[in-house]
Length: 608
Image (cartoon, rainbow, N blue to C red):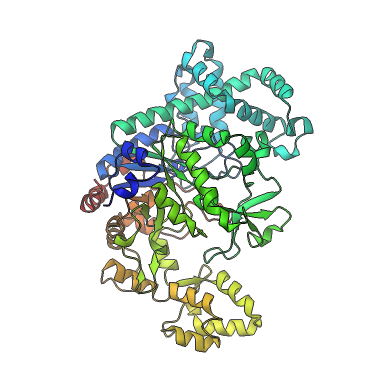
């Protein structure tokens, strides 16, 4: 591996600190795993069992989805604070400087009421945990707790706004801050101080919870370091509109706009996320203090961090709030609008971020990517993401792993995509019907003509889940153009869809170098072959979702390969978003026979 890319970059000191070597790792949201002692969902001390599993399998990285405090939609990328950790992840049995003996029966009842390991997370546990935490806190003497006082004083710059936001949210019956009375909506320093004094006990309670979470995460980081496993945090690029950050620092955000993403071949209507974009002029005027403080706090817990929506550092797709919701992200514009400024804009922000923390940044550079992105990643020695199913060339379909970027994370799937077996059985070789229809709207075709073309091009008998499977007889572009009655130039978008999907399964099997029949369903053997293939990538990191490793077990594969078993359906309100739970406990994970196969794969690819 050519190390010069990293050694001669802006992040060279951070690479030297963690060690420049090929690594393998696992990615997951903490809510989706659980141990025998968990209450309701995964808890911070459970990460220790993941670290143990990494040691067994030769993985040396754990990438955690955001642990920030959740809002009403439970989406980890729509947090109510860039600093506060979600209290649901606290282990009540591991509280520091607290006498739990009077609460043993209540702990037992809570665990019985909210057993971990159910099909989906029951987020009601958040409220019930807080009730019991309040009782425990009330019996604790924080005045004699030196470490809590130190934490309180060191972090009060953000804790005060977080506490005020939570207190006022309760006073207004969970209404958004935009619906509060003016004196609280636009709060003055005098009013803030009065509230902090009036609700002193509640402020101390909220800060005490955050301190306990802080201590539990510190303990996990120490354990990871002892076992030579790196922890990667996920720093949400944006923050919920209804958050302590936006309420307290309104001047840092453009509140008349929503952030999102423009239409592409995967999201025909684009995306509208709801979070307000940054007002960079005001953040710059304050010398990036807000950005620096966020990273400095995260540095307590992580060796590395993932920059969510990295391309947003160059420019962010913004939509006016007056735009009807049904139009998604179709009508918007980039901010800043001048493409000539994007590279400079991103580099300035990156330099600030790198100089503000000892953590090594990694980038999520997916979506509509500006030309300058890859250049900047190389210059700064930052990894992007090479997602297997989207790495294609114009010659024989899929890009060979040895041609992946050295500065990348090679991965089979993401938390926003389907899993590999679901993609293989339901999506490979197909085209999204909504996107296909959207392209054809440009030709002003009648409904009858559109239906006729769909019938001529696709095997409508196999249509399911909004996917269209190309007929085998459409063997080349000339046949496609004859049916369409269009020239090559007029049909470029349709040709792109066709080229990407036609013979996709056959091309993928050729890429894997296996003789498994084209129409075969996903099997444990196919899963293993694919894990071996992605692990052979030239990418410095190879990180897979925990589910992709679990599919090596044939029983788990058959039970959990369905299309709705995924972490998130982007751009939708779906009952299973951010709710699925792994089919085995962390204790069982550490005993699985497939662990030997994972270790062999990592050994063979030189990632141990």
